[in-house]
Length: 218
Image 1: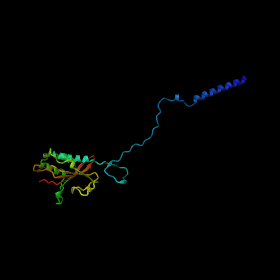
Image 2: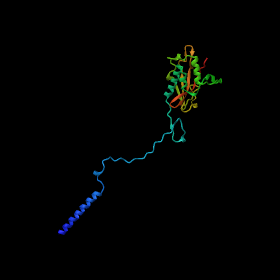
Image 3: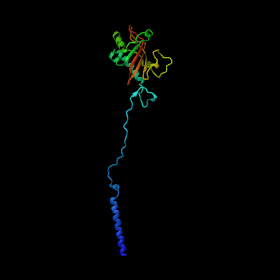
Image 4: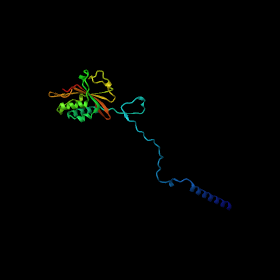
């Protein structure tokens, strides 16, 4: 019996020694892990590509395009107001800065007579030299509520003016019809009874491309 007891004690000691050895060479417990917070694995991202330059119009088969948002009516109205402000100030340089390089004046009464269409900037310089537009200061030249605006997509069966032909407009062009209230100051005629502005987009603004006005220097 004593031999059996000694054998069992030896087996228990060997078992305890084996368990202790396994604990020393096994996986680390949670208490032994580093306290530094684990970071998520990185994810590779493709760099964002630049969008294509904005354009006024595009065809269906052109793929990815960026279209310009149309300029608001307020931009056209502000352009016309700025035009008249520079006229009253007789500001030739400021007026020229508002025009396209090929800006022209169209005089309806001379169209059927083979008359030429003069350049807009030089014509207004002549008008400033011969007439006193400072007399319009403080006068109501036109009423904003009476201004009419037309775009290329507007379908007009009977145009209010022969010069309003929306089919000739580019997509971003705008026509602005301005009935004039104060065309004369005293006996001096300074403006036609109405002006029709053909505005052409240039970035975030409009420039004056054509002005139709039935007015001739005497």
